[in-house]
Image (tube, rainbow, N blue to C red; front, side, top):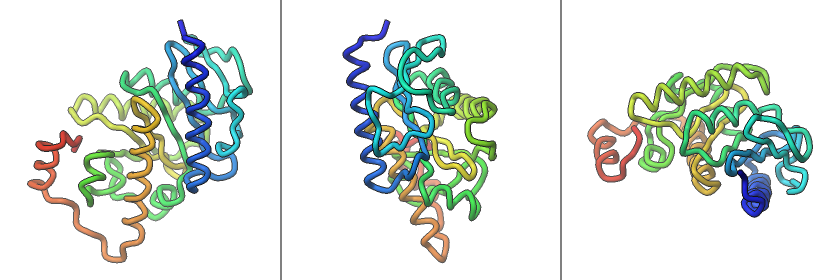
Amino acid sequence: MTDPVEIEEARREIVRVGTSLFARGYVHASAGNISAQVGDSHLITPTDAALGFLDPDRLALVDARGEQVAGDRASKTLTLHRRIYAADPTARFVVHTHSTHLVGLTLAGVWSQDDVLPPITPYYVMKVGHVPLVPYHRPGDPRVADLVTARIAERAASGTPIRAVLLDRLGPVVWGPDAASALAVLEELEETARLWLLTDRRPAPLTEPELAELRSVFGARW
């Protein structure tokens, strides 16, 4: 069962996050989507919705079977969001943006397929961790969900769970136990991409002893 009060709180949180992302330039026009898991249901932004101008009553409500029961037509990425929640039991909030520097990174060339950026700052290592690249597929292609959940499973099995992936030419998908956690990942990821792209002489990654210290002191996932 899903508590109606929790649903209303989640509606307000999604609207707040969308407004914040739009105001700070992380999203534009109708690009991107946001969802929240509430009990055994999900709330997700409607398809082609402008995240800076969301109406809480028009958010799509989807039941445990994946059937929409209220709101405007759900985002075309609904399958991806639901699969992330199923693959990572800690996930309660998912955000996908077309953030400029992260999309630009996929166009300029990522560091590697397994790590789109090197560990160049301690906060990137601590707050973000490994971020794999997902090959390009059209927006809403259900095959993306298979690729993302496979990456989640691979990293979980290796002891370094991920909080994000980067979709080639489309941007990041991040998740966390709440909105604040997901946004912290998104913001650190976008800012690190910006640093990387603005640096003419590519900075060296942190050394293994430096990474080991971050793992030991802060529990970094690297």
